[in-house]
Length: 397
Image 1: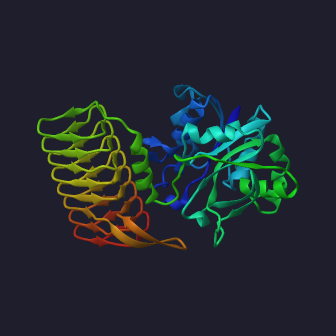
Image 2 (image 1 turned 60 degrees about the horizontal axis):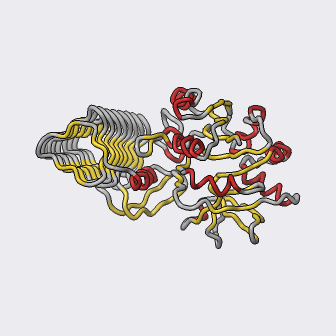
Image 3 (image 1 turned 135 degrees about the vertical axis):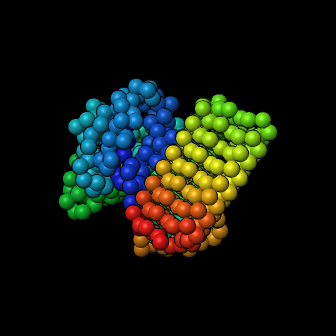
């Protein structure tokens, strides 16, 4: 069986973390999201992958190449305009060699066990799971083992079963996509709903736990914490005397943990980092590659992406710090409940910190308030308190 992985989207709702890379290349536990999809396919024995790329496609193609390093074979097709999942699938039509194939979103975390129920099904199938917030997804209505409709983001949802974007499809779907696109319906779920109305039988299968969707910036924290549940202790770097490493902690090659540090797992610290002295890192934190965290700082349940610097005596809690950002000494990103306005949506978050985009420079003794979103390549002068949303490239004087 072949698989089509949809990896063309930009991920606008994940701004400011998709300025220079597509959503599928955001790292969770120091691996791109789409790598979880590729690994899951390989583990199920599916090794022929058509990957649909578009926005910042070079980052995906250069990372995976022909797929050999991941024990798969990858062909790429380009969706020049990101017009939805059905349009993306249609782009892959001529690259498919079989009448039956799997389709997955490249921007969801999946495990091989999530794919098995769909693969084993003998019909066109939608993978589903339960959600506490079904109105944010496509709600799957069903009668017995068959889907009767998929309702995208209903205002009220009485059913908790949602569409995971994992499908087993046949070439029959290509007979319906053009008409749906003409009617302005660009999603695979729209096409499947149309097929059901014309008499096509479509099954649903539960995919189980392990599937994760990353939609908004604060989801990055939760997704990393979830990914850490399966790690084992591995120390490849240099841990100085009087540093304490507790529990399941991964420390990459060429990383130095200075004296007086206390790291309580589960935690991942990448390669080439310098941590400390006297730095505290709590469970649920993921530190990328080539990160520097200076003396007397605290990192709690946070994600710090590659090549960032956290200055002395800083405090980072339930926050995300983008690639190559520099935080001066005494910077504080506390966490608490917060109301976040994101586009035309309002979110009441129980516990969140700051979201700082890539390439930012936050000068000393600033406070980035819970729920604040600092756009990419911003500069914030010393002693400032930041709340709300700061647009990309802003200078806060």
